[in-house]
Length: 287
View 1 (cartoon, rainbow, N blue to C red):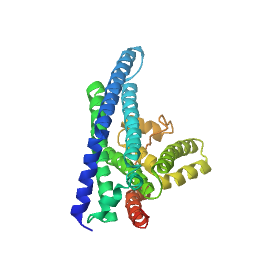
View 2: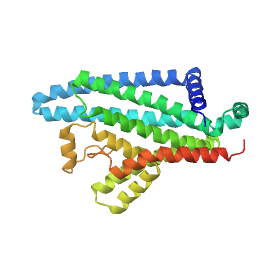
View 3: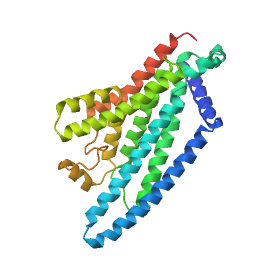
View 4: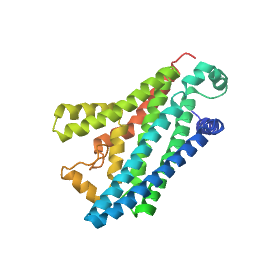
């Protein structure tokens, strides 16, 4: 396997995304979202500041700022997950369906190099997107409310990992199914992972072991939502974390603890396992 071939495939994949205006569309829509978030944050923050005179405390204002920031980043996590699936859902299958892979693989490029090059390109694109969007939203929170996330770098890293998990899952599906079938499967799993997180949250709230175990089981299959919840821990203010630790959970899509070490290790191994599986299945698939 030649490293240069992998890098060449990655470069052409990024150029293809740019030429199809996928990157431009993503940037424009994302900037619109940031602008809308800033307007909403500024309006609601102004209302919250005015209400302090009516008996509310500064703690309430800090709670509001933290909650709004987490809400915004939760939307970013959802958008990045959607984009990760969208850009990679036909990464291999669409090339097979169109017959273009015959020309590509006729050159001295192995199937493993094609898979790795595609995966590397998508990882670079999604990492840049997540890092930029999180940085912009945290900047908005700081400029409007003076709110600073306690540990932004671990949060960014975990949110990047969540996007990488999903795009790797989609890439693997692309070596097995047609583009349409893969889209149905991976977007369903994306929604299922979100639902499992909600089920686990309410299971913990009512002390229902079956609901908790069901949420954990689905999280092992698709750990993207669990990783987001771990990222949310590093974004929230100490006052919010204290409230959640005291049993007064205020956000059903956030966590008061960092990701557990076993789950984090599994999430790190997950893309590696799926990339290897993608190479294995694609190498044995008839074109």
